[in-house]
Image (cartoon, rainbow, N blue to C red):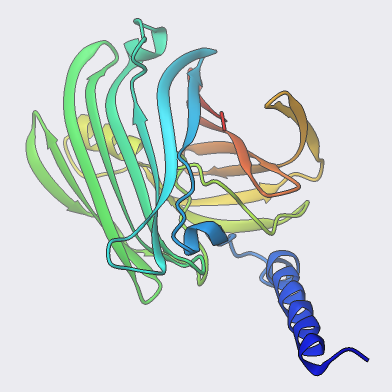
Length: 288
């Protein structure tokens, strides 16, 4: 019979292991219909910030933009984090067909989340220089906080039409759930299994910018809800010189179609495709 202290330690390790298994494998099945929570790694919770993840963004097989994503602590907080994504133009970029359609100077998207995965707020900024080959200077900023299960976003637009402010309709945010933002690929999605389906609110700052700048009125695109469904088949995807078994999630709804490839072993998102139109598809491929 081992000493009492060792026995207690063994029991505690058993409890921790089974609790982790319950939250990652069993609870998602019980909470059918709810979206997965945002995931923040233990290293981030301890304050050891994860290195920035680099992505390449392809349109029609050509590099269109650079993308960097990361996790940082919220100032003066120990259990709140910013999940962020920042797009910029490649330094060696020549004039590409995709840039003839859209001259995007900058797009930065951020989710503020609790370490338990609850969403607390969001903010985004989009700066456009041209659209369809014509000068189209526009800056859009969106921000919102989650209170009592509702996200109440506000949008500010600065364009040739002047400065305007809009309040979007409140969005229901599920408990321990999240909002889907097609241009903010998360690092990991856990608790997936074939056939899992959920409904999720979404917002798309790029479509909001198009709508506010072109329509000269309210914002009639870029918000709503999507239905996400995990495909039944697991596929091998080449990444980093290796074949990675992946689960595939399809998001559909409103004017949005998006596909996400997630590693089976660790839940790492390695690729995401966003279809903006028949001729405009962004392919986000993780590099590290």
